[in-house]
Image (cartoon, rainbow, N blue to C red; front, side, top):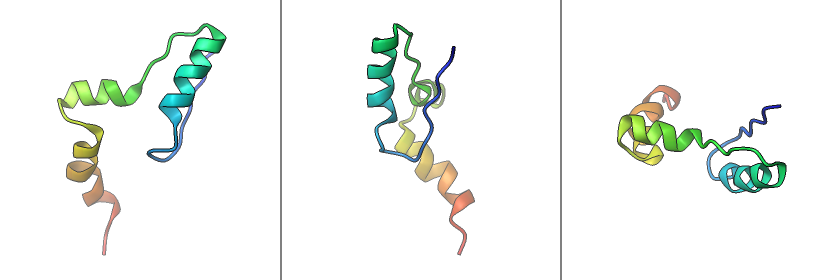
Length: 58
């Protein structure tokens, strides 16, 4: 079985995910960390540079 936690930023997905994985005996995988490693930037930097321009039209 695989479990995915999804939601908006800063709601505790990583915190809950780590605890849940520990209780279930699963390996925890943090997609944010993988993305940060790939781009060599923090999620915050990626959001401000790439995502914001696509989602905040005025």
